[in-house]
Length: 330
Image (tube, rainbow, N blue to C red; front, side):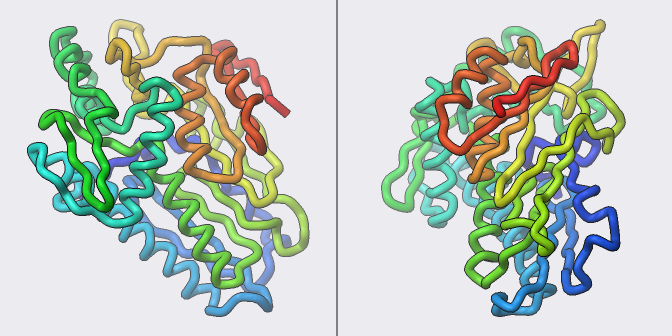
């Protein structure tokens, strides 16, 4: 079964492997559940405490059940998911879940705030480029890109209660720029509702933490060095109760005639974004915000992206330029 999210195993942007690599720092009472969802390996580690209302193993396993549940709702490629149904509705209303409405609402808010630079109807373009197929190294024709681009318009999405209508029958919703972040936030809410005060949620690069480590120390989240072997850490971020999400041009990409083509596509011309950046990492309270902002800031480029992050409360960023310079907002 195909999956829809924008990050694949070979291109993990963030690794939390060294959060738990020193065994003497790990409390004995912790449980990690690992599974394959969203076309990547995900893991949830829950640390025991007197406040939790269920066994740590059950809590971690329940998060994986949530991953499966949400994938069945938000996937563009899973048949009869909410998003698949909307994309194949031929302009007729489709009743969807509360979560799908919530996620679409957040995605549309970012589309409106960015004047369509990030757009949940990017699906016609992402399907055309098909960066999920590692064997494909073909640049679409200009005419093909123009045709796909003509159906990218977030204003074609209309929400009425729990019903969604696409007014363009050829528009295609793809929530890859925000869905994993939304899911990480829901997992965090669930665990906190069960009394969890320390946990790590790693959805294949989208890292969300709860509190500090049980010993009171901060979490260390490693950021992948662009174009280096997977697991090569560029820098380590110290975080407490924060989300860390990255976007970059070195994942889901290919080279033709010495030109790099990557999955972050322009809604202006339909081609991969060209600017002064290799990567943007966002540190924020909400993983959904971090997911959307990492893509948006990459699209904006360093100067405008930096200004945007400085205007937002409780949000920081790390920009990695094309020449390898690291610039932080903190």
